[in-house]
Length: 190
Image 1 (cartoon, one colour):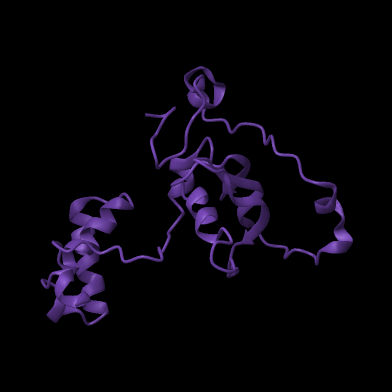
Image 2 (tube, one colour):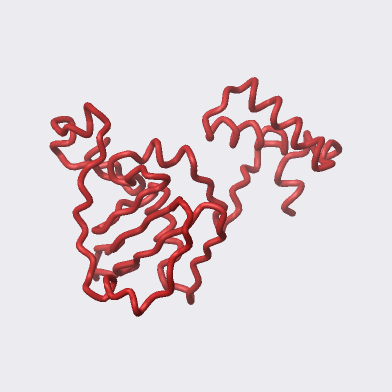
């Protein structure tokens, strides 16, 4: 499952159980090489003097099938704590694929990224602890109520059932959703 995670997930190398990082949790060396243009400081404005929350270096994703498709090609950027960062581009530019690699849904073909210092290739579980993603598609399940959705997503983020239940009720109250608490999502989405 770690070497061939299927359609979704980050693939580990076949030898991953024999690596120091697997047993000791040490991050692997950053193997990406930046192009000479990335070193030319005159081409860029100065970065903020803030801690980096996300560091992306040379990220690339190639989907292979009947025809190879380069979805993301050499993306490099930093996102800083306390700053809002947006990925802008036309349809098919690679924004969703980039986010899918950062959250571990897809494995990068090459390049690397760190989320709060955790490498997405070797420490995805730790990187995910500080991630949240609002997808572009509806993530509601027709058979769950509003309250059950809050419990479900709370538990996905790692809190216990009882804590998720308590937090879910707090949000329902704070957002004035008490009348909708036990309504299935199908009734809300039409």
